[in-house]
Image: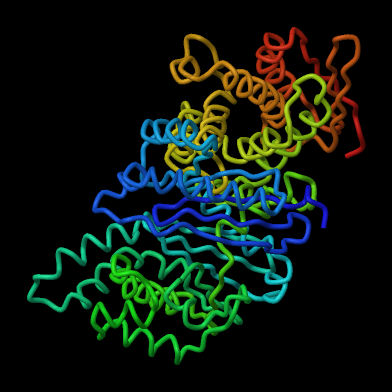
Length: 506
């Protein structure tokens, strides 16, 4: 086993710190250890700060363990779902100074991406559901997330603002209530999930629901050497009944959980039961595949051990938003195709990578969604819709890039007089400007929204950029729009693009 294939995945949630040593090529798990659980507080944003000594101690131990295995490469990620940017920066500095380890913070959208990838990227496990509709359910401190897969492809994700933190607070408030607290809790969960009933209606045949990281049931029904197992409905119903009737001490002993986490068992069952009903799943599964597996799969892809395009998860999410707001699929499909073609042909000029290519693809997909609100200044509407709806898999910075490309893809140009643009770091400004310049050219080529162009060639020679459009139709409107929208490209690169037409048969 080549040492360079071994990698250390370190992940910190508000519950604990974990290390997974994995072979990136084969996905073989070499070692997995965790710290002692963090002490839970009413204000979850204080947990990391309160546990800084435990965090540093655990990281020191993890570093030693990786050295014992000969692991030379590792990365440390942490959930930023419940702390603000300033607190995250302060904590990063403390951890770096005391352990020498850099923290990479993950927002909710990124965490959801890696959770979806944990299942989608494990070929053997995912292939076992070939031809079926699969729902993956995760319940965390900040939110409940439901993923849908069909024909081994990602379809959609729903992020519901119903986390254990909120349910803990509700349970605490109900303790002295004369009402049946379990019934009130179930009603509250219903009120948060009810909107999904219509979206999940239809009862697709051969559907299953997978519970991810459901520790209470994993501890009883999922052997340590297995990543996935079916749970009979009868067993689920029996455990739900016990969770609703048993004392806190019995729950701790039976489900092998700490007292501080015992109050989460029943809400977890109630959420799962309701989504079982909504999805009409015929089978229920448990899985140990979680965010750390997703991080390992993405890291393996980054190192070139697999050539699968997992960016399709984020692209599909963008398509879902675009379809929700505007139905004109042909225009956005052509603009995206042309933008990516121009990007690929001008690599030596813009010097951007595959990640920026994905951001351009997403921006081309969603840039016109603001038309659903108003065609006047639609680009501003597109931008704030994206700011309010971060896409699965994007960091906060990447979501900003997509939003800003949408904002400036039409008539306004990014510049010092634009408040949104002016406040961004210089390197981010350049990335946005480069991608906006490309998208503007592509958007102009279908200014009529009639998809007149069947083929496009791009030639960059002697500081001349010539785009040749193949079309049997009149491109007067496209040429007029192209000349207007090419100005930013000229300002940015000192090269004025020109558009030529080659007539083809209709």
